[in-house]
Amino acid sequence: MKSYYIYTYGCQMNVHESEKLAGILESKGYEHAECVESADVVVFNTCCIRESAEQKILGNIGAIKPIKKKRKDMIVAVCGCMSQQKDMAANLRKKFPFIDIVFGANNVEFFGEYLDTYLEQKKFLNKVENDKQYIENASGVPFVRDNPLYAYVNIMYGCNNFCTYCIVPYVRGREKSRAPNEIYAEVKNLLNLGYKVITLLGQNVNSYGLDGSTGGVNFAKLLETIANFDGEFELRFMTSHPKDLSDEVISVIAKNDKISKSLHLPVQAGSNKILKAMNRSYTKEDYLLLVNKIRAAMPNITLSTDIIVGFPGESDEDYAETVDLIKKVRYHNAFIFMYSKRRGTIAEKMDNQVPLTVKRERIHNLLEIQHKISEELFTEMVNSTQRVLIEEEDLKYYRGKAQSGKVVLIEKSQKMLVGKFYDIKILSYEKGNLIGRI
Ligand code: 5AD
Ligand code: SF4
Image (tube, rainbow, N blue to C red):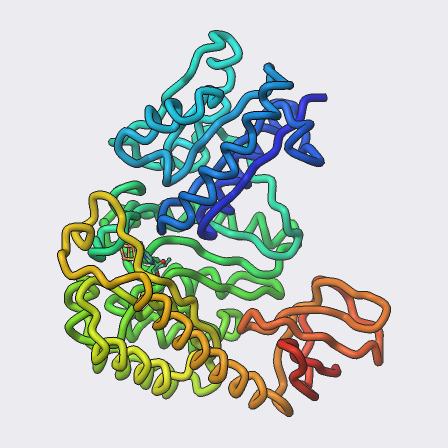
């Protein structure tokens, strides 16, 4: 039997698209290879959000060269956001002449056809198409999902926001919402198959339906409809742009037990000058008001965020505003990045770029501050009751995750079932894990 190996980089969207690539390959009779050396088809599903991601990917593609030298019939394909960039397909091929197929972020569905064409012609195939819109399930092939409990469901593709640092709108194109009935059918099917946590995916889920393609169904309506489906499950979503998080959505989250009380709300920066330069369309004060509103409706919600340090023009005073903001909000978790210049974005042309040493200093400092806040908040969870999905058991503990995504280890005082939710009393917080008992 022929086999495949997929390298996946970047966000949940890519993880989910790799599940589609696996589905396509398995429908063609390929099986998952134990290691890349033995695979007949190797796919790199790439990311270009930061330069560090691209460097890592280029290194990993380069490492295939000696393997391909020994195994001339191995097929190497590169797809995803990095390959979607202007002239990238040709550049990749020049750098790595052993690449056989390059295709873009929006034509994952057609990989099966590309593979057939390649096998027929045995000639380099460049299938990056700039005006292509992502089409879900054009191939009619199901996703091969890795995890039996957690499932991703796309609700929209692309982004219209053009935050000035971000390359996503250039590689993923404009926002396009999926039809609600398709989404409902997919979620129902996943629930029937026993999936317990459904995560709705989109670059900016709050603008679901604003393209006018969903017959008036907006994100609040979509969430509420799914939350009313039968069965025991948890509904999550990402990512939510603060400028578009409506009162209606907040109220739907608050009212429905099945919707996770954990929200990812990327703030990016704390200084109004920088937020404006980033084109985020809100101020620090707007954001703090929004957080207050969310917490007034759901006092126990856990919040997480994304932050960029060292955006062009960020002074010490601007950075201090970010520090102030994370101290005020007190996120359970923050993903902190150094600004990375991306080709074709507006911020690329800004002339007041921040030196790497300053960016490094700021990221270390901010990570330290955030770590302390996270530790305090998780310690405060001791004595609370958390709803936990049991994922596995070992000799000493059942292991699961709370809604905040935090691992919970549960003493084996009584029989529990993997794949079920339990209310767990948190007894302690040790070495990054919550320890609890049913
Ligand atoms: N440099 C650094 N971080 C970036 N992000 C997006 N573009 C860049 C960039 N050019 C971060 C943002 C976004 C997350 C997914 O990646 O914080 O929310
Ligand atoms: Fe990038 Fe901004 Fe769109 Fe998020 S909302 S994908 S950061 S442009």
